[in-house]
Figure (cartoon, rainbow, N blue to C red):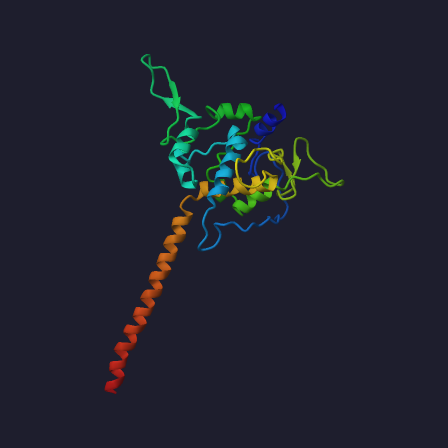
Length: 258
């Protein structure tokens, strides 16, 4: 358990960031592109994958990283029932109304509350992570070039360094990360979490699931945008056909006169 706790805490070091405690890159690194269900004009999110991804986030990432733009009610958008979302919220505490003496209180979170930070303030975050503030993961899938492919590639890119590779102190080798040196230790291992249903919790599967979930967190309206795009294209097609028929009718009468 101590090893698992240490790994989860270390997850905060520099997750998904290319600044501060990582060495600068020379050139670009090829990402591992995945066939995501949300790709393309008609793409949609996989609810089962997002629920598994939330589990990975909750059991691994949430020890150090927040999702400040996600409210507990939003979890119903990824397939959780209202009762399930309420139960998840009840596991967290948020600031409550001051008591009769004006002292701060805490209460169980509700559906309208946003996911709280794992740290009380920035100073506490720095103190727990060697001076670094673990980034919030709400928008990370859109903040990094490559989006979910970047997240998946990074999480599955940990390897033993080549014999002729000089690894800096406190850094870890990652075949995908620019420069191949990153301060964040490998966060995922086979069966690190236990899925109630679905595929085996391999590193590859967990990386896909949490990347899928974080993509939704960064762009929760993607499906609505795709649907609106389809409606607009259908409208434009019908309008084009009508204009063509009207044009033919108008010019047909002109041609008859001549």
